[in-house]
Image 1 (cartoon, one colour):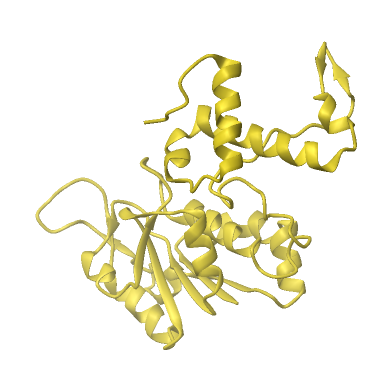
Image 2 (cartoon, helix red, strand yellow):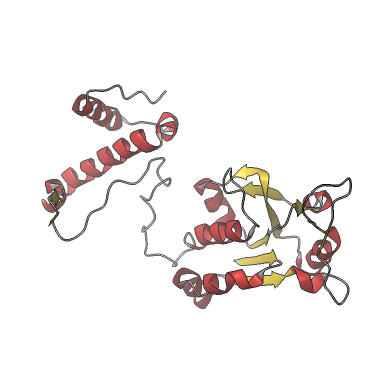
Length: 246
């Protein structure tokens, strides 16, 4: 897979490129990650990359010429171009899986006040990583890249991500490790029992419980098995409260 990031602050990716997950994917030839400095595609000795907006307003707008010049030099028919914008589709784990099947991704990072709108006319997709304001698209680009890379074959141990939060429509169950008791807090006995089926049921139940308390809207959308319904009923009886997240 090829991922090319277009940014005016390439130095922000220095430590990200050294992340063990990214380095492993690159060394295993699963990933070719390229960080391009958009300023090198700007004209003039000062590499003029931004300009004041027409019609007035605060801030500076990323000019379309350098971006189009860069895209003309790297874009291919198989490229999928993504811009990070506030009006973009909220990014999900489903998107991570979808994008991991692409062969050539181009991630366009905005900055300042945003993009000249004509830049967005050429993108294939706009994404948002949340309803909040960031200084630029560099952090979203790292977020999306990290979420994709960990899905590539061989990057993680086999099935390591299969039961993680959002993969099954639920949040992941609580996790524990040594010591068995710490400051009066004890690891649940079932996890020490060695009984595989009891452990499986406990994990499913606690995953349902955590989702119910933290992200109830996910539980609404979950196709529930008869076992799930029975476990939710147990949770309701244990906590003596309704479990209907609606």
